[in-house]
Length: 394
Image (tube, rainbow, N blue to C red; front, side):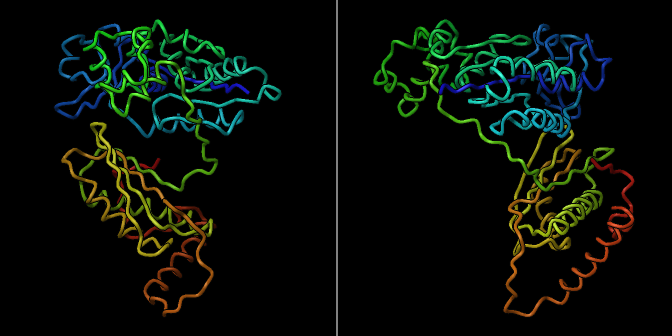
């Protein structure tokens, strides 16, 4: 059976989400870039800004000289990720084989063998497009092909809006007239090397044998040989049905105050500890991600000494991770804490005497859980989290 891959691509995803949230931006050139950083560069932009000559990675100072009407929006990666999760949930009804980035607007769906349930893949792609338009007011490009490589190139062909279908057996003919810059999987160094040999189009490279490609490209020769022929056997990874155990905190005002950051960390740990105990699970390690006001991100993971749902133990580890990850003077906008390797606690009793301090803490947490379950999550707080005026939860 021929594979059938749908690729949905919401062009200029970050800019599209921001315009969707603020309709007054429609009709203006919009770019996504950190406004607080002195050497900021463009992260994303809409089509109007592209027509003005603005490109990703362009310095913000240069952008301001090009057009003073340009609207500059600071990036909100957690918002883009939230929209992506909602989009994936819509798509999950049709196949478990879904793959996407966290906030890039790209979704691959392997719908091989689903014709009897949902009709031809082309009809399903059109239906998904309409569903996204109606539910999210976003306008995705879509393509259908036999693999991810060809499907992605097809959406690039019709950007910013459109649709493209590449039938089985048409892969080579489809790719032949295209410039090599449209091929995903070719690195910048690969393109420069090909250009030095005056090779700019797929049709110019295809006559070269694997042995000839091996001379300039060595171990990458086989990859390039398959690429220019539209051969891609990589599967569409299955999306995890179970949501990760994680908690987010976004500051109302960006901050670099250590006390405020520690308060935020404890609020996140409280949420994680409560969730773990409700699910009767413990965590083996936790991951902390901080987002700066200029759009920069840093993630770091730490292993816990023993699997636990004890908030004080997780707080101590999370605080250590914070000061290891926080290496810049830029203010912090958003913090995420994620439980990794959550497992069921061991039923076998320990050979050693239980730590009396930890045992006492466990009793306190259990009592607080019962109060929160009955009267709400904020019915009882620790002293560290009481003064949290500059923080908002997300």
